[in-house]
Length: 166
Image (cartoon, rainbow, N blue to C red; front, top):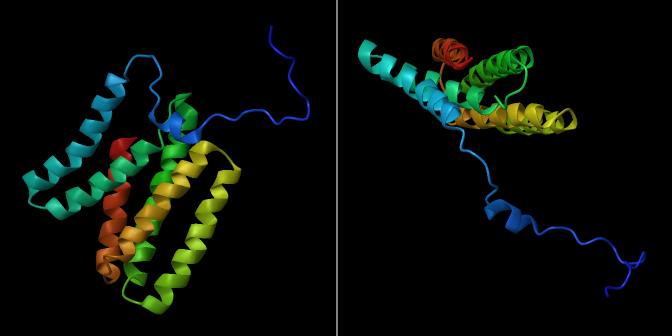
């Protein structure tokens, strides 16, 4: 016979590392995987065919990041989330491209952006994912500085990639 639980003993929490490697039974999401593959490869192929591979790669990054925020649910909710993420990514890459060549601006900008993106955790897991991908794009964009023309091109490429993913 087992002893009754002791009210003074805190409950046993599951090992967080074990949760990372445990597999749960279920069917793999093959359709979602194929959708993401087409979403990512489509802009790259379009860029190769048109001779603008760099634009295709930028659009592909945007498509990937927007696709990561699609966690299912009603389409209306997914559409709003993915549209907001697309605009957030485009603004992030635009601002980051302009700020990238100015260290005095890039560092505080990254700090403020990271703080804002971290606050998205207060709303939902989906918002936190959108904030995380927006911050990643800002960091990558800072590493690829450019002038207003390049920033505008990247803005348009990210809007196109996000629209393709939607």
